[in-house]
Length: 421
Image (cartoon, rainbow, N blue to C red; front, side):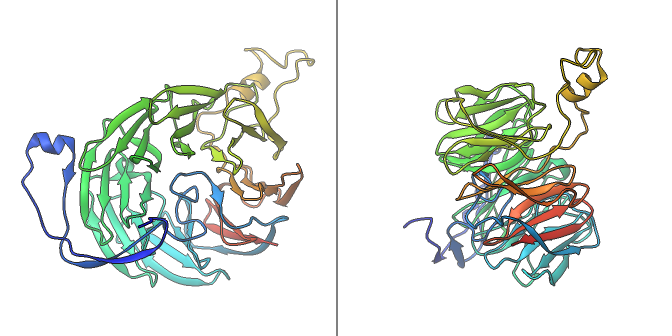
């Protein structure tokens, strides 16, 4: 049975609750479910069913990106946005607001439903599961599952709250979803807790579907693999700080920007790391990494460059996509050096500066970008850049593919833009 094929199977699940000792709970807590029910399995469907498009967090779109991108419609949703939206196979867009609401928009921008999430907003990006359930994690520590009609299917207390649960959840091909931060909690398709384990440190970025289980990366750069009933197992470390997690290249290589200054690969089998790209004096790298269909890693810099680097460290792509701050000119007296304000601003950007949203790439090699200054466009393989706007919004949160020749941009002010051709 191939997990890539969408299958509907009736599973008879029998209760087998056994009291766990303190030692067993330290390893991993397994909790089983209730009664026979129908489970849909297979990879979640959609143009962007999760943050970074897929479960490996590659940023690869199966649908064609628009070029040149043209403004088709925009909607303000009556609240601000802090987490990326998701898009199902019909083109419906699901947006979690910073107020306790989730809004569904049709491909034409019309509101399909608006559901209140009790008294607490979503703290992590939403995710679509195998059967199309939209799962959201609230700041008070509950997982809420919504059907396609916007009705609540389940509400599950998770035993954690706030930043302890803010990593992007992982929808797995068996119909389950893994939620995490300080702990990892696996929910079955009906929302029941199947397993729970505490991590030694808080996970950041997004949980990843790895070859041997769920992969979690910590702020310090440690990498853990969780496969119930076994406890999370540390497989290695990137050796430096991660802010927005990693992406899985191929079957076993994690790629992440470390400390904003280097691109590092980690082998999940051996735990060995290698620096693929170091500090090239072009500002800090934006996170996370995007994987080009031809197999090389891409990221942008704070100075507006789009860079591509292959496994051998060779530069495969270099393109200007934004008119960001440029490095100081050595020919200008006083432009460089520790005492130079221009040099300090370039090499040491403010700590609270938000990175630009991650890139999205399609099968043709077109790369969509949204810069923190509001510049949005698509870079073509021939080096040309087609702009949608120099300033689409003041602070873009994310962009996601939304079907052939369509993509959506979510802005922090609560505006959703649809771009097409």
